[in-house]
Every structure is written in C-alpha cells, then in structure tokens.
Image 1 (spheres, rainbow, N blue to C red):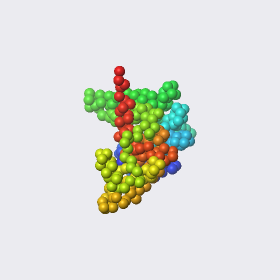
Image 2 (tube, rainbow, N blue to C red):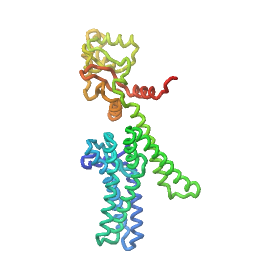
Image 3 (cartoon, helix red, strand yellow):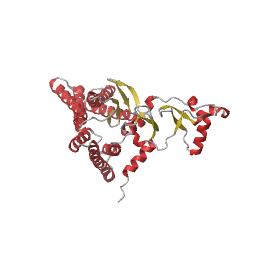
Image 4 (spheres, one colour):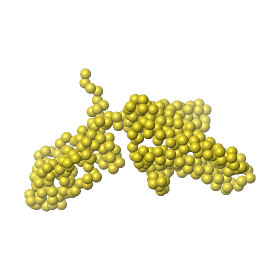
Length: 374
C-alpha cells in the first residue's frame, strides 16, 4: 500500500502502518476516553485519555493478532508473508501467492476470524472469572465485543473479506477452478458494497443523518477492492497455460557479439529498428550480455570498424532472465515486483529466445479476449 510507514518486524514479517491509521487511532482514543469519562465520573480527564489510548492500542493489537492468524497458517503452507499493514479499515496481510488447494485456502481464510473468536472467548472468560471492576472491566468488555464484531464482520461472504475468501475456496472446490471462485466471491463483495453505499447515502440524502457514514466508506472499500480482485482473477485465468515463450516479441532486439560496432550500426539503420538496448548472443545463440546505443558513444566512430560488440556490451545478471517454459503468470508477477518493463527469455541451455515486454503481454491478453470470427 503506497505511503505506508515501516515500523519494524513481527515474527520476521515486515510491519507497516498507513497514515490513515493515525486518524482512526485518534478517533478511537477520543471516543473511548469520552465514554469512560461519562461512565466513571470520578476518573480524571487525563487518566480517561490514557485509558482510551490504551484501549485503542489493544483493539489494534487484536487486529494484528487476526492478521497473524492468517500469516502463520500461510507460512505453514510454505507461503511467504510479504507484510502486515494497519490502515483505516483494520489490517491486511499480504501473501506472496495463493494456496495450492481450496482446502488450504479455506484454512488461511478462516484462521483470522478464529483468532478473533478465541480472543473474544478469552476476554469474556476473564470478565466472568475475575473480580475486575470499574474502568478495567469496561475495557475488557470492549475488547471482547470488538473481537466478536471483527470475527463476524470478516465472515461476511464477499471479497476482500475473509468470508469472501472462504466462499472463493468453496466455489473453487466445487468447480475445480480457483479463478471462478475469485470472480464469484468478488461479485458478491461488489453487491454487498453497493448495499453498504446505499445504506449510507439514503439517510444522508433524506434526513441529513451522518450516522451511517462508515457504511458509505466501507461500501466504497468493498467496491474498489472486489472489482480489482475480479479483474486480476480474469487476467490470471487468461494467462493460465501460457509460458514466457508465448509472449516473446517478434524480431526481438538481438545482435551477435562478433559484429563490429560499424556493422551493428549499419544493421540497425537498415532494419529500421528503434530499440535503444539490444541483447547480445555468441555463436551458439547463448545470451552473453546487452548493449545500449548510448554505450557506443564512448567509442570514437573511427574505432567502430576495429571494435566488436562484445568489447562494449554489459553483462546480464542471471536473476534478470526467465526460462522459456516458465508460466507467464509468474513472469508478469516478476515484472510487477521488480518494476521492470521487459525481461530476456532463455532456454535451459542458455540459448536466447528473445525479449518479453509488458506491452506484449497486454497485447496477448487483448488478443485472447477478441471474439472468434464466425
């Protein structure tokens, strides 16, 4: 999430806070401190604020515990957790990839609500089993009720909520297609989002009542995220079965290491290629480096006949190449993660196939969405 602030690690998982969280922290602190001051007139205003802040922090600690529930189950399945982020609507655990089976996906999804239910039961038991009273008892009661609400709210069956992920896993299990599960659960999430928006807008328009303003915010949150999730799932489905080689650019910018710079310049001019960077291969067609047009400017033109491409080229790191049989979906994710626009595609023996551009993937997707001619 853009604009987040890293505050450390939790069990080796990067932990971030979105600036919107501070707004909610202030509102929750003010709300609960005001409530405690009204409920217990004998406590001072300063102590009420301290207790309100403590309550707010404990509530967010419950949200973190909820996300850790998802994270620990994902880690047990061999899935890396990229981060946990607190933001205006709660928390988000960002996973490296999806579970391999619908059953595993179900357990990742249900883990968070189960943790919240356990916290609800624990707080309730503490309240009944101990002689705690006064403000501390009120705080325990708030923690119990909020954890119950957190569990029940997240079980609503629409993405991106946990209940939506549970629904996704169920549809995946029934149909055998994970993407159908995502699209179906996203559609449900969008419907719930519209319901929330309407429930927030109508009282505002008809009566000027801001009481359901949070419904409006939650509705927009559901609509945006459910729509994005459904769109990404459709892209994933179209990329299924395709490999990196399927998206290699025709007439990729490739030049032989044995050419002189003059031959290279003439070849580039005659072919009309406007590429600014070329991949370099040896006699066996293996990738040995790359040369940018700007690299040639460091060599006087009088020396171009005596200077070969191999003398000017730059090495290409193995980590910046992809195998020709690698799933195209993985390659797209790699492009996004490393903020790249293109990657060289090679075979297992190092022979260069060509270059894969993000633009070529988009064209390939557009081609797969075109209706077949009658």
